[in-house]
Structure formats: structure tokens, C-alpha cells
Image (tube, rainbow, N blue to C red):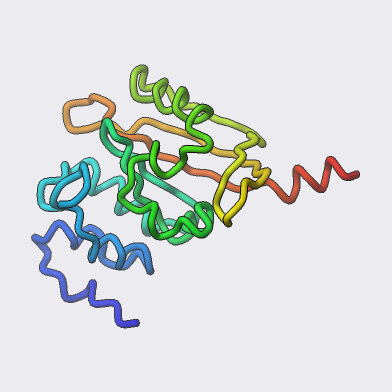
Length: 172
């Protein structure tokens, strides 16, 4: 698949996503005007910066942006939603994760209202991502992303799945 990101003009907001692998391409081609984020040319600089860091990282990272916590993520994070990928791209977190919303919504709320980061270790998240509900465990953080005015506008989510280790230790 040809990566045409090198052909983007420097003044294009899409230039922030030059590279970024498969998810960088998906983000560039996505119809954002059909989401709560609106057209990409209207996105705040803080979202563009955070997302450019996210998609170029080799660590699983997602960004949840705005009051709807619209989901954006990189290649390394794309296995986490399982068969929901790529459907989850551009979806509000509540739609993407209805089965675990009761667990993660209070964490999102804390970050968005206080600006304080959270960290969860080996957190059980019973996720429905391969046609059935799975016992999944994750180490993850939710950290604030501040807009140009200093207010929290989004959540930076870095995390690793620890299911195999947790279940393996339990079996021992």
C-alpha cells in the first residue's frame, strides 16, 4: 500500500500525520466531518500535536478527545478492540466500550474534571471484542491533554494488555 503522506503540503493539518503507519493513513482518509470532532481543518493544535505523537509511537496509545471522548489510536493499540477495529476509530468511548463503560467512565470523568492522571494495574476489563465477552487485564493510564487555554480537552491513554501474565500467574 502506497503511503502518500510525503505528498501533503506543509500547511495541511494532515501533515501532522505524515507517516504513522496504517492508522496514520486511516486518520488522513477518515471522514471526520461525520463525527463530533468535525472537519480535521477545525481541530485545535493541541489535538493535532497529541495525535501526531500517538500515531508515531511504537507503544499502544489512544487519544480520547472532547466531551464525547472520541477515540483515535495508533497501530500498536489497534489490536486492543479486536474485531471492533477499525469501527472504533472516531467513535465516542461510550459507544466503543459499552461493556466496560461502568469501569472506565469514572476514570475519564476524574481526568477531565480534575486534570489528575490515573493508573490502573492488571485491571480486569471484561471486553466484548471477538464475538464474546473475554476476561481481559490491562495496565493503563489516563492522563490529561490540555488545550491551548490550559483546560483539559482530552485523555491520553497508554496501556498494555497483561491478560496472559495475570491468568498464567493465577494458574501457578
